[in-house]
Length: 285
Image (cartoon, rainbow, N blue to C red; front, side):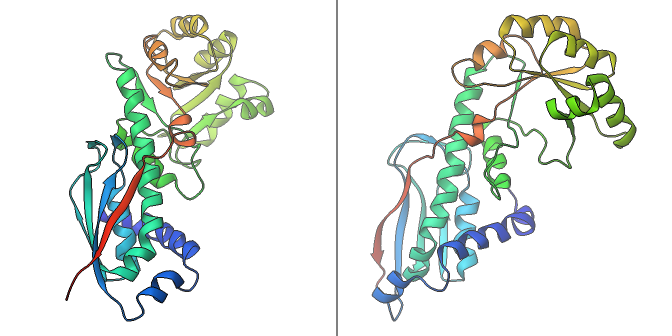
């Protein structure tokens, strides 16, 4: 995530998170350090995993003011071990303490997503299939979570509803069928937009191919049905497997030969990576 992207998209969200945690002041820090003091501490990994979001971590302190500097030791995408020092934070102790929780919340969550994504990608090693995320993200955290997926080795599906056409069960039901939904979307959407359609049966897959879908999502199908659907489509559209994807079955699903596998659990069910700011000490002036 470069600085331009950060300023244009992430800064306002980080500021909202800070204002959620500090409505007026950090009473605890200001009570103990009334006159201000300088200190330093370390960002330490408390578990093995993939680090993601160090730029967001540092930016959180920057947005609090000019009183804190962050020296990064690791970089996003690194596989870190428990006990590793990832960064050193120094400056106004009141600012360090005020930003600590928000900065860690972002970094732990993003690193958890990157770690889970990396595990899934490794399980798919040797296949041609690309792992994708979904829109199943926490509100106002999509930019951070989708970035973390990429750090972990996955790729992003559409960012939001304006980003692409994806006709799902309710679109199809209301339109009166797969073919009608595709025809309507093709007539409305700009010609540069691909049309993706979700299908649940072989008959729906056949209708999607005949209607000229660009991408066909095979939703909640078992492996034998997926094989039959891929044979039916026969390269006439790109293919995506979706529904109930996890570490328990992603290797088998990747072996079937679809172009993509999308997995909502990358963002909605990934745990955090345990990280901590430790060893805060006063710096003598």
